[in-house]
Length: 247
Image (cartoon, rainbow, N blue to C red):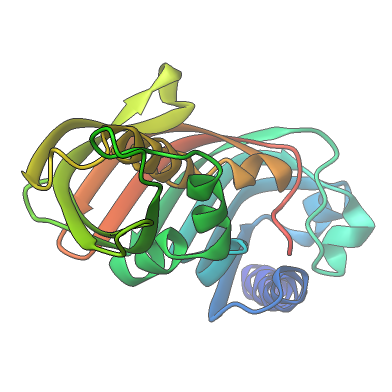
């Protein structure tokens, strides 16, 4: 009977935590929370394990994660807040994060106003005509061989001529897991067009993939593994958590 009561208590807390976290995150598709503890320990702020799974979470204005899974063990939280379903850490914790980003979300990010603004801050030139190049569209494709393919449609300012730059690159972990960089770039088309612009594209794409916005949300990531499959990019990372993510 005591075991059943404890399980019922956990289920109730999990459901309350799901509703509380969903309200903090704003527009998300689904939130699942599993808190492993008992009411006596929770009353003292002790939690053995917290597992959180969120689908469709916007991590920044222009990028939505298909899935975020977080697991942390041996956590101390504010007891009263925890009983109300709000997980507030009393001290930083460490955990493991799994993040899935799909191809459609990446394409929305690479064609966003913030991405476009960054690129247009630097002027690139073609030949010796000093033509400013405008990026009209960026498309990316996540491939089965671990590469990311990019097509970028460019417009030459003076002639209004349209050019296409297409290349593949492999996402790699850099700076001890602090960031992702695109390496082994292989041009498929348009190599002669604006190498400076291609470099700017690569730099900003790497920034997006490094998910630095997590730092503003109280979670520092150290990426351990990158997997690229058809249509999806999956990251495994160690996380240093000061607070749980919110909108």
